[in-house]
Length: 378
Image 1 (tube, rainbow, N blue to C red):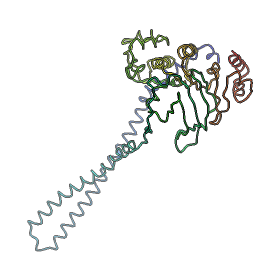
Image 2 (tube, rainbow, N blue to C red):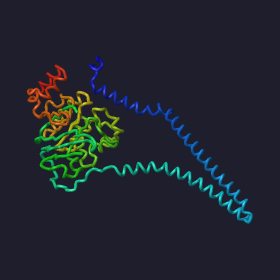
Image 3 (tube, helix red, strand yellow):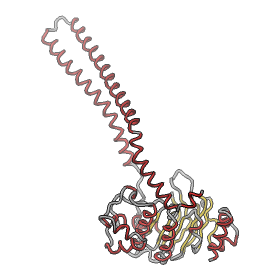
Image 4 (tube, rainbow, N blue to C red):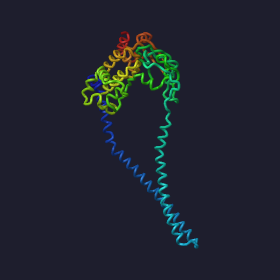
């Protein structure tokens, strides 16, 4: 425990990430010989099967050839020229027969790829909105969100994970969502039912910062602005606000530097800050954070929290969190239990009511619970 107390979590996470990258690089070499033996064995068995198949085809053809010769012994009136012609054509026919049989087996093997292609072609596509509602270009300008009898589940065959949600989030309100964890109903954003809006438009108007930062194997500019809608000045300004300007500026190509796969040339905290800068560039009025600070060091956590309060003060912010410290400064906290709304109020009011949220706070320990209560009171 002394090691974890003396070292910041960010350094430990960065080291852990680097170790994972090293494992990704060395594991293929470690298993190379074993996989090569497995592949060679499979190839050897495949070659033996082909030879065995060809042998039995030859046996069948030879047997039929001998049978034809024996038959000719019983037809004395057949002359030698006709016998020679028949035997010559039969030899050619046996060669074609072997070729056709081999091609048929190859064709069956190749059909596996066709079956996969057919499976991909029949994947259910996303529902296309039939009745597209015309909305203002700057929608949503307020950020009011209303849930009306909303049911949610991952797959049609599974049970509902959210059941009959009914609540309203006021414009510019900061909501924390906590709890232990097919669509029906209506989600209204600024008086517009999102089920009647183009899906790509709804997605473009909501910024999301996930727990695992997602970066493209592209340039830094493409990661911040995939559709080239903003100038370099806007991007540099966003990087400066998240304290990444100096880091990117020192790279050989600046904004055009290459981001490696999964952002491996940046630390965990830096990758999360890139996602935050992307949200700043988008400048949407609705922001969703899904445990955005769970895997970062305290300095990055503090920077993200300060940026959220300062730069997204005009936005409606939904913070999904398992760490209660992340949401104690929210305007209201939505407490979920078994897919339903258990409580929905200001953190301090929830603690005074001593309900489900109060039990969650108390389960963190006496000292942590006391700190959380002080944060809620402030």
